[in-house]
Length: 136
Image (cartoon, rainbow, N blue to C red; front, top):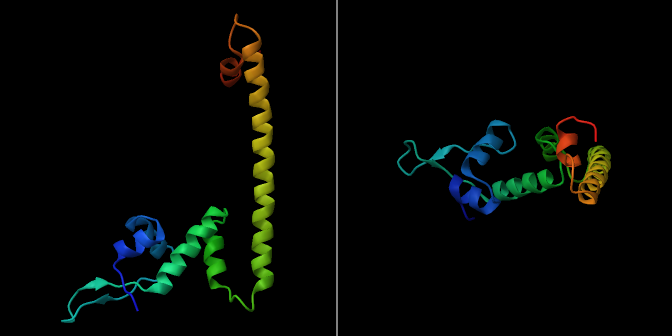
């Protein structure tokens, strides 16, 4: 079994050491005991399970799950808790749909402003005027 330090774990997971420590404080990654050959102090050693867990966290974050949701997902049994996992995914999809709708609305508004700005070269720029709260 390959073991690694916290720096090695962070590197393999594509995060910084402080991110690993943050996840440990949040209870997402267990903090292993310190290990040394003489029984004093020592350094913490992380295994493959820790790497998989860190990659799971990062993948779930990319999908937009919150750390609380990720913590719940980590606590679920892959074979027994499919209903709850689907519920969490459905909640996330609903939130993504809202975000996409908001972004599409913002894109449309900005396109209109950019076209208005391009249509004439005199007077206040509609983009700047709108962001300053002025009527165009």
